[in-house]
Amino acid sequence: MAFKKKFAPRRKFCRFCADKELPIDYKRADILRDFITERGKIIARRITGTCAHHQRVLTREIKRARQMALLIYTATHSSDVKKKSIL
Image (cartoon, rainbow, N blue to C red; front, top):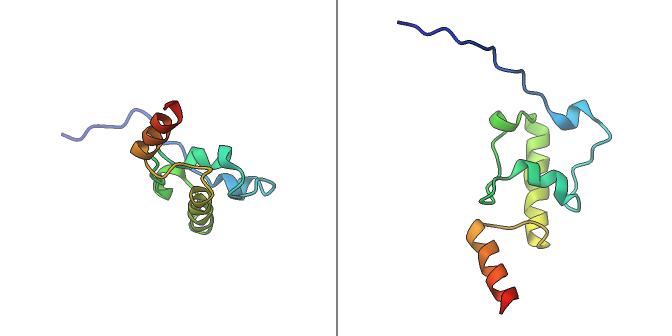
């Protein structure tokens, strides 16, 4: 028995191709946080809908932001930092 899908999946699109004025920059951590999980992993492009070119740029900028300590590497890393700041 084949089950029929109730809803057609929404077409994913690249946010950066749609809005040419939206820069991908390591200093814009608020934008980059949309593309990483709460555990600090970069979300795949098949889930986010970004094109291949912008996914490569996005990955590079996320890694730069991590180096500059604007984004976390892992969830355990962020809890260690919180513990040290409390002490």
